[in-house]
Length: 106
Ligand SMILES: [Zn+2]
Image 1 (cartoon, rainbow, N blue to C red):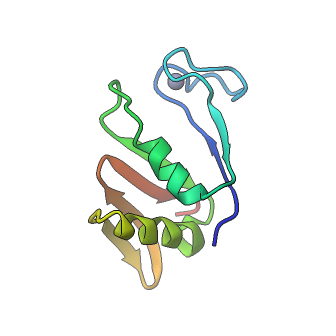
Image 2 (cartoon, rainbow, N blue to C red; image 1 turned 135 degrees about the horizontal axis):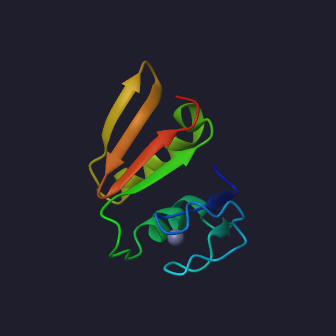
């Protein structure tokens, strides 16, 4: 079970601003911490309307060995149909809806 998810986000308009405490003029806060049901809240957050983006890419550290399993479980509970690219038991990428999950180490 995951206890905590920390997110830093950027879009094409704010990607040059390294300091994540500076808000995006389109999306507002760029740093988020999810404590309660962090995987569910993360997926809900990633599914919030972003009319300027047709795709959301989520990159996680060590996701292939760890985090993507939690996200996959939750996606299946939501009756989504993830497309997985795997190498043995490790995930290379996972696509579902408009979301793409990648490992930062791959
Ligand atoms: Zn932005």
